[in-house]
Length: 376
Image 1 (cartoon, one colour):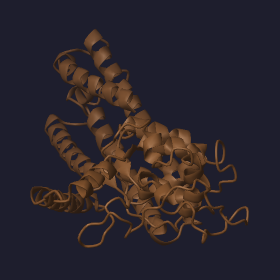
Image 2: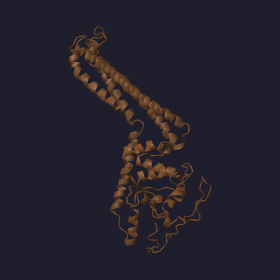
Image 3: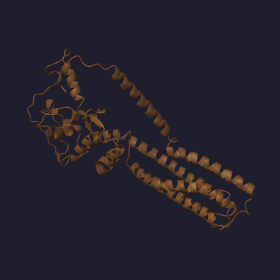
Image 4: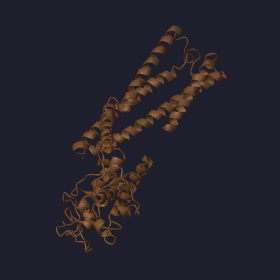
């Protein structure tokens, strides 16, 4: 499509350059033949371009229509809206084809006086005054049609403009809050507490490291992993804790080869939700998506395509902080005797035998308010 647009632009420029020469030529002369050839090639390119656009839109329409059969809630609302937008864009493509084709055909008085090669001259049928009026009318209609088509393709009519403005407003609000809180931040007077805060703040990990961990679930570790059943709790107990049993450190440090990493995002989530959904939500955030339904499907069925999109978007090095990875689980919950049953194996998650001392909310040393300094 990009190459077709370049070719159409080139042919349009040729039309402008050759028109003055074609107006002075006679039927069959070189300039007359070249100009007619340029017009016909432009028409062929235009038809091809619109055909490819419409085919792509119809293919997307077919996928969305199929998705509507099973989609529910917000996903169904978005699919319905997407179908409406595709119909608008199909109308826009048709308008562009008809109006631009009319302009190309009537481009220059040459097409009426000496004929659009190899067609015969039309001058006996259309008087000059009528021809000028017709040309002006068609060019005016083309400009109106192209304007409406641009609005349809941009999504301004279907709400993209309003949605974009709302997103900008929210981002500006978040930016102001960040600036305000950063300007009023003060270090804790307890040096040990502050040192622990700074240590935790350097336990981020990249999106690439997260996806590497996810792709190894069900293969290198937690071989019975089921994305439709296992929660974040299950993954922590069945993969993260066993993988860090020897070192006792937060798995984020393992993911980043011990390199302290400052996160750009902090993720708030529920451990009772599917771990698959947590990863999909993080990927959706990296791509600037508002929901993760489609991301979840790609993550499960076509992760290579998803990672290619992430590489192209340049977000693989975006860093995150998630407690399941960024907190040292062997200092807190690894020996919990109230562990839930694994939803796939049906067996209770085993307690970790590492024997490390646990540091809980009130474990000494504490601050004056009784909070443990080293509890993560």
